[in-house]
Length: 374
Image (cartoon, rainbow, N blue to C red; front, side):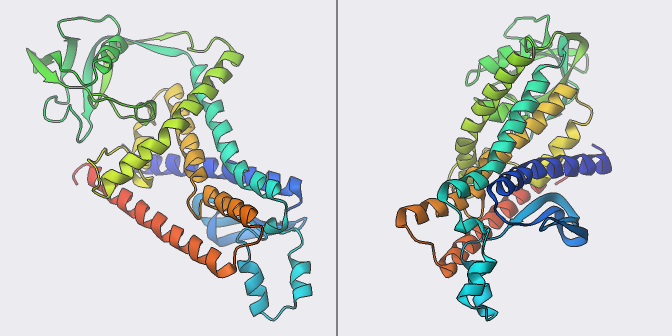
């Protein structure tokens, strides 16, 4: 895995997906008449900016996505700041015209949910594009190229092993062999192997995986492989409409499985359950990006689509300061029929931010532990 191409590809993917998310907020906010104070590419410090029709468009030094700053997105915190500067109530109300928290509930929800919708739609479109690509057909025995740490393959298989069959069966297509092994999840499978030119048999027990785990690159046995021969076949999707239908269905299926997988992964990180090792932070995602640089276009599109759907689901979780947390506060205010105090809202966002950063640090430590040589 080459370091510089991997980092550049990772940053490009993150910037595009985050900007897609922020464009959703931006477009709906503009349409609804909410004041957009700034649309930034990257994060400060600022390189430069221009102001057009009341919105500052900025380019920033830290290339980890982008942001949209809406007037009133932090609730009454901005009002409190204005009072501290000595503005009168009349001046504050004038300044807060166009503020998000002064809009109707349905408008606020539409603005907050627009980014999530954009990422989901982008994921569905990327899946559709992947399913429209010619399908590679892998023929012959498979040669193991890498072993996933903590997988059933670790300690049983070796890089360079050639798998010629399973449970005494032979397969013309390499994917039929791997599909058979995957179908035996939870049961012992005897693999026929050639190691250093000698035939041997190895017994492994494939693990049970969700669609999201499989899409993230987690294998039932946990090894990377290459086949003896590759022949390009027809696409999986039968035309654009079928591709869109299958892409949307795939995005919905993956989105439905992410919350459960996230709960299990966090429980593992905190020592409350066996560690699954399936969750990945920025370091782990960058590693996976590097592995896909030489993969097929379909695999690359599917991977980016998976990240986009993950971004959508993570942002809709009811956890401050994510979009879902802001939605939750809006709904609480709607039920209570009054705005939350600036102090309470600030405390909620700060607490959520601290917990979020702590989780990112824990996940990053796990990612570092997985690096070769760690």
